[in-house]
Amino acid sequence: MGEDMGRSFADKLARRQLYSHVPEAEDGAALPDYLAAHFSRFDRAGWIREIEAGLVTVNDRPALLVMTVKRHDRVGYYPPETPEPDAELHYRVLYEDGDLLVIDKPGNLCMHPTGPFFRHTLWHLVGCRYGEIRFVHRLDRETSGLVIAARTRRAAAAMDNGNTPVHKEYLALVSGAFRGRVHAEGFLVHDRTSMVRKKKRFVFADSSEADAARLDPTAETAVTELIEESHVPPDLTLVRAVLGTGRQHQVRATLYSLGFPLAGDKLYGPDERLFLKIKTRDLNENDLARLRFGRQALHAAVLEFRHPFTGESLRFESPFPSEEFGF
Image (cartoon, rainbow, N blue to C red; front, side, top):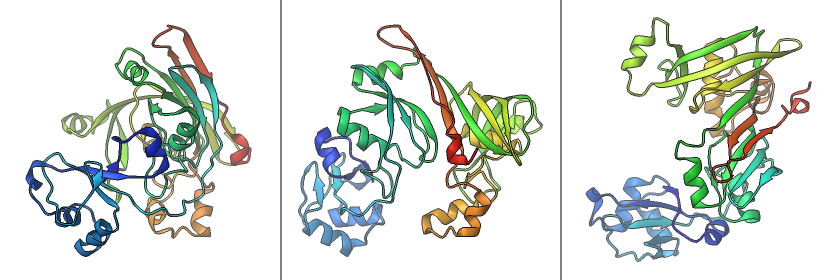
């Protein structure tokens, strides 16, 4: 089920709801059968209990056990409130007007509700203060730094129409002695050696693997300028990554493929099995020692863009949180 976008914003903030839209192939299915077939949270008997408890809706009305679903019906579910994991809940607003916010996000804070996180998200925290917002781009939960939020549909559309490019720079603390400058232009492809489906690797455009990448429909072009900033004893380097494209995991996958994995990265770090341990919460002290840090050392340091309505040139900078990583 996805996060609900159809209710009033105040209702969305007050209580979490998951939802789905019924596809044509499921038209006429009994409601408990539909839920059990598509959502593994409960079996059929479990979904019957949830319906009888008043926790399931169809088209925003309380569901009845005897209902059959119709194509395009919106089936909603209110999961019970549960304690959320700890998160860093302090953020800074560097810029605000009636259209946009520029926010400095801490590490260890999800942007949107996902998994066990709802109130402990940037979306909920900022929404309670400013009302409905739409993030223009996203950062991973463990990535800190700058992000833009639109306060109106008009502003969100203007920032997303291709006429408002955003210059982005990241600072990454990596393992190894990175030297000089590397222009990494090529492709992000699925890492077929990985146990993790979403893991990617970077292939240079002039490498022997480039032809295969060009024929891969899932491959994405990626351009990153990587620049040595400073060395952190005994064996780390702070690297500036200037984005020419904006792909998911672009900086992390590129640095990993070049042999300079991000410090603290559970997926692109010393052992991807550490990433698999997150879901089962099996990370132990030895695992944490291998990672060196509690989160991935990646920070969105620079945003620069022209305001879509005033035309003003805006630039924002956020320093790398060195104290968090002990230097």
